[in-house]
Image 1 (cartoon, rainbow, N blue to C red):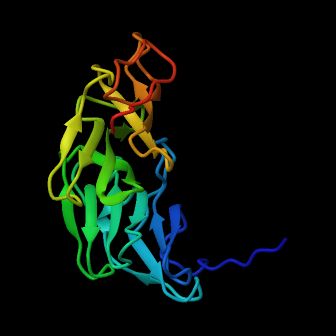
Image 2: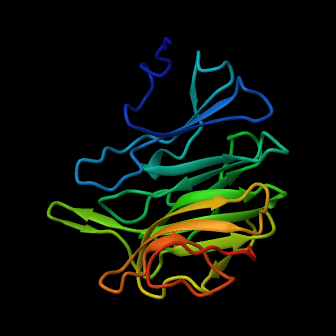
Length: 227
């Protein structure tokens, strides 16, 4: 019925995602920077945290990420948080990749780095085991009159050990350059993983689906039943 602004005095006016700690609803993580790639996209200044339901905020680092794609909190341990950083849109480098903290945001470790041109746009847990993580990489660059919205470094990655090691998945997925990918895991059947994929034209390999059970059709929905 009514809303109250809680971040008007924050360090950034462009925000991408808000995540509430499943163990303590007073703890909120807020990612900054638009996670789209249009020419007018504005960058942010990192990741923020509130421990009092948004009354006050503290910036917890990753200022050079500029564009955050997603934030994920380990449901077993509130001090473990993952941040998918897409990185700067107009240049290479920056804090780009998948970052993890185990101390509530005091220190961050980059646990998945594809390249200085490719960041991470989405991350999801296996709901049975939060050590199993799926992440999507997104290779993109913006110029005044051009947008590179994909490349060979894009794809879906999987870790079974909380981000220490990663495998790029390939079976059944588009073999051409891919763009941004959104991910979802079925909470009742976590072996079923969905992916919404933008893929290179004109072959029409994009669609809604995922990966290891069967090869993707030219377009339309597919699903990975094997995880």
